[in-house]
Amino acid sequence: MKTTTNLVTEAWQLLERSIVYYGDRPVGTVAACDPSVEALNYDQCFVRDFVSSALVFLTHGRPEIVRNFLVETLALQSGEKQMDYFYAGRGLMPASFKVVTAEGKQYLVADFGEHAIGRVTPVDSCLWWIILLRAYVKATGDLDLAHQPEFQQGILWILKLCMADRFDMYPTMLVPDGAFMIDRRMGVDGHPLEIQTLFYAALMSARELLAPGPRNDIHIQVINQRLSILNYHMRQYYWLDARRLNTIYRYHGEEFGEGAVNKFNIYPDSIPEWTFDWMPDEGGYLAGNLGPARLDFRFFALGNLMAVVSSLTNAEESRQVMNLIEQRWDDLVGQMPMKICYPAVVDQEWKILTGCDPKNVPWSYHNGGSWPMLLWLMAAACQKTGRTDLCRRAMAIAERRLSEDEWPEYYDGKAGRYVGKASRKYQTWTIAGYLLAQDFLDNPSHLDLICFDEDPQFFDWMYRLQEF
Ligand code: GLC
Image 1 (cartoon, helix red, strand yellow):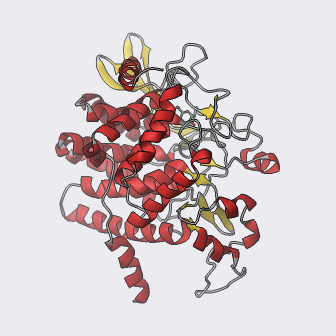
Image 2 (cartoon, rainbow, N blue to C red; image 1 turned 135 degrees about the horizontal axis):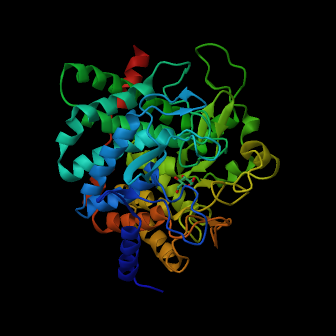
């Protein structure tokens, strides 16, 4: 087995190889460099995939590629895109882009989902973009870039798109299916956790990035209000632990009016069998989704880790999330950190939720597969909560296989023991995720780029409002 130093050297070489150039400027990294399979769109730079590469470049004193990426993707945002002559909402950021050469000239061509399998909308791109812009400013001190008029405009378009008055009754963001990392039908339409935690982190970022001035003061007020309500909503209604599970188990249905305890009319019979034993005494997590008569009890890793990193969960809840990971180690980490979601949906439920998706069969890909790229978020959450012991354990497990298996996109099986059925090799966010996790372990101060401090006012503010 290779030493950590050798693995880091190898990962750096692979990361360099994945860089995309526009003219002679580096502007991103491709999703994967796997010569053995047809590239499809894996030769493009995905916004969500680039975040881990970008953070690695920022923490190693190479901000220019991140700056170029932010400038170029911002220019793509304003281009109006259409599918079947329908214009996508202004502010949307592409899922991915590529450099195309025609008649001796280079162009950037964006995909807003109109080429993606299933024509899924990349809602998370614009949220990651703001989060990355803040990380860039934190790393370089270059607030001037964020204060440029086009950047301010870009941020406001995103905010307007995300906070527009629509039909929603909730402060969370309503999105179509496959709107984020899980970009396939998986029962993640509506109000999925990952989007809500990214939304929260993006709002926290935006209030730091808006230039001072009377107009923006109003925007910041609106952001603060939304943050409070979102924080309250997520922690009141998505939070699950043994106590809360017991409350739901004893719920009455059909409660009408303002005094209803069971506000979303969750029927106790909808609690899946596995939940009762799986829930530890000491530990908890945020549920995967919430809607009328719908609470998705599955554990989704990215949303929960991001909740810890962004301080959406308070210190005690974050501690409980880490406890859960420790207590359910074999299920969530097993032989490769870590499960994208737990458990897999099977049989009839698999048919209904995924539309019989052969790529998302039980314990594969998005349906309970293990994604090493999640290591960087795990490292950030572990470092933030003082649980580096967990992260070191996870890294040691990953190091046994990643290089030997040629840095796969994902692993399959209940314990994450097998390289994924259709997994790419040399997946860039696997490589960058490993480097970043190592970096967060070695340099805790780098966490500043992605972490947020708790704002205790948010929760209190909602309670005060309710008393009022
Ligand atoms: C798959 C993943 C998506 C990722 C893309 C490129 O479609 O589901 O999250 O961005 O591959 O790696």
